[in-house]
Structures are given as C-alpha cells and as structure tokens.
Image 1 (cartoon, rainbow, N blue to C red):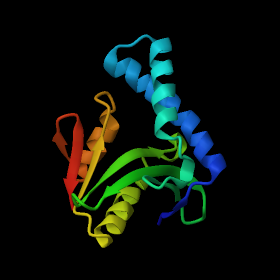
Image 2 (tube, rainbow, N blue to C red):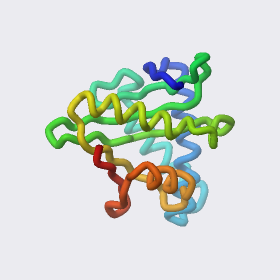
Image 3 (tube, one colour):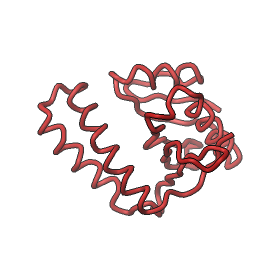
Image 4 (cartoon, rainbow, N blue to C red):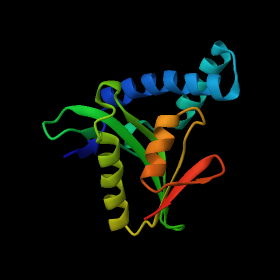
Length: 153
C-alpha cells in the first residue's frame, strides 16, 4: 500500500534536477533537438514551472511512499474545479521501483482523492516515445486527446 505526503524542499530540489534531465531526453527524442538545445530548453521550462517551489498555491506535488516509508517517486497535479478536471503535471516512479505496480497504485490513490473533491476527469501529457507510460495510462482507461491524455473518473 502506498501513501502520499508533500515533498520536502530537499526532495523537491532533487526531483527537479532529475526531471529536468529526463525532460531534456524527451525533448531531444521527440523534437529531434540537439542535446545541448534540449537541455537548455528543459532547464528553462522546468525552472519557470517550479518557481513557487513545493508549496505552490496552484499545483500540488506529493511524495509517493511505500508502506514502510520508502520514497517511491512523486506526482504533481493541478485541480480545475470549474471544469471538473485535474491535470497531472508530473509523475515519476524512481527507476529502482518501476515495474512493481507502484505507478498503478499511485494513480488509483490520486483518482480516489480527486473523486472525493468532485473531480470527474484526469488529464495529462505523455511523451510520444514514452511507450511504457502510454501503455500504463491506456491500461488504466486514459484515452488520447491529441498529444494529451484524459480519463473520466
């Protein structure tokens, strides 16, 4: 069983560095950018989206924890109650914990939380080359909406 809690500042900073590198790889692969340009663009976009830090008023970022308290990854999302939707801005299971069902369990926990707040749809964007993530989302009922995905809940 997994649980959630807010990321600490140290975890947030570490995750930002890791996700910046991962996003640079996605940009290079999906947009066919040279590595240096992809890295610069990733750093710029990541910095702009994380200016408020882990205690943002517009975005929630949680640590995903195992039953024994080990950090498994994180998930970030923005709620839009006026549209009955939420948008997953960030979702990462640490490499050593992938393939063990933690991603499925984390998304189910997020669904339960959002459903309790009156949210009826979850949206996200997945990189075209991230076949593993796309397969997970589709298995869980998300459907393609252009380059973004959504799931009615």
